[in-house]
Length: 88
Image (cartoon, rainbow, N blue to C red):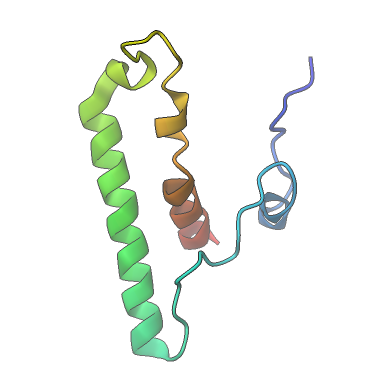
């Protein structure tokens, strides 16, 4: 069985199909050192908030009231983009 999301061989592979993450998210300011640091701080806060939500949601994260899979919260697009940018 082939996975829809294979393990990428490099970080740059995450910038192509099927992942399509950007090196920097929209709204990331890179004008000077202070602005860049502020943008990274915002990414860290976004990631920390997402991680707190995941931790506090516990198993309910994957069990929604209508029976649908809650996996989308785990893979929140903004959270994944922030994580990728910080790791990169």
